[in-house]
Structure formats: structure tokens, C-alpha cells
Image (cartoon, helix red, strand yellow):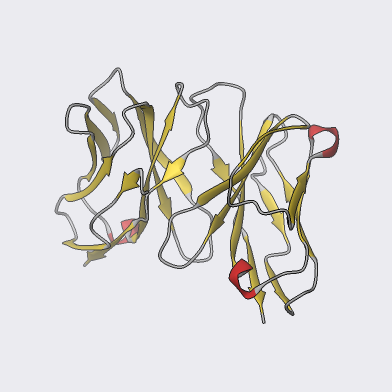
Length: 113
Length: 114
């Protein structure tokens, strides 16, 4: 039973445009959400997080939006750069991050110059 | 902050052999996690420690798997009698004491069982 779902295995975006990566979750107990980026042969790297008490969190070119009623979150990257090409994982936890993260299967983003 | 270190980076072993991986977390982090990742999947939780105490184990962690974290510093993950289905990337991560601090991952150990 996949509690965190990333339904798009891949996404291609032109350099300079917006990348939107989506994530859905089924467990209503989740209250803390994170996005990780992974390059080949490296471990996942933390990008940005959001608590369920917020609906938006911004860090530079990265913004995460949370829609609790829809159990949906999205990561916006503006403007997209070729170095953003990687696999992006959505992850969730409950008890304010005190439980192990549950990851989605990832979305491979390709930013085309 | 020297990051999370994992050794070895790659391990090839024959079915039935035992293997052991090591993880050195970020020094001030009291929580240490083991995850496994297979092709096309996200990281899957195996187990975690708070200091030297193993607090949770996933049902994925069969009795052939054992993890330790003596003295609350580095950790080892041992797989006994390896099977081809154990082939995966084994990721270690550590986390600071704040509940909402993010996990910091190492670069993983890739295990291939032939």
C-alpha cells in the first residue's frame, strides 16, 4: 500500500520555465512533508520541507505547496536550470517529523537547455 | 559537518555469504536510519536508532538482517546468508535532535548478490 504517490515517473521542462512536481498521500496522519533531490551514484539531498500548519514554504527558486484537504503537495522550481535535472522524491512523516520518513517512488526531471 | 559516510561504496558477494556495511553519521546527530532502495523505487525504511537504542524495525527487516549502533556513534548493518533479492542500494541517514530537522543521507552502499 503506497502511502506516498508520485504518479509521474518523468518530466521534461525547458530551461528557464517552471517545473511542477506533484505528490499525493493517503495517510491523514502525515503532518510533515519534505522534498529530496537525488543525482546518480549519490544519496538523496534535502531540498525543502513544509509542516501541515502551513500551506506554502519558499526557499529561493523552490516553493512547496500543501493542500491538506486534497492530500496533495507540489514542488515548483522557477526558473528551471539544467543542474536541476535529477530524481525528486517526496517524503512524509507524522508526529511532527518524529517518525521515519515514507518516500514516494520519485519523478525524474530533465531540464533541457 | 563532514556529512554521512558509508563504506564500502560497492559490494559484490555470492549468494549465501554474509556482508556487513558501516555508516558514520554526522557527529552531533543522535538519530541514525537505514533505508534500502531498489531500482524504480524510493528509499524504504529498514530501522532506526536513537543514540544506541534501536527504536523501530520495519517488517522488511527479516531475521537475516541485524543492525547495531554501539556507543551511539557509527552503525553496522549485517546481512546473513545473502539472497539475490537483497541486491539494492543501502542508504544510511542521520538526523539532529529536533523532530523536524531533515534526514541527511550518505551516498549509500550498492550490494550485488550473484
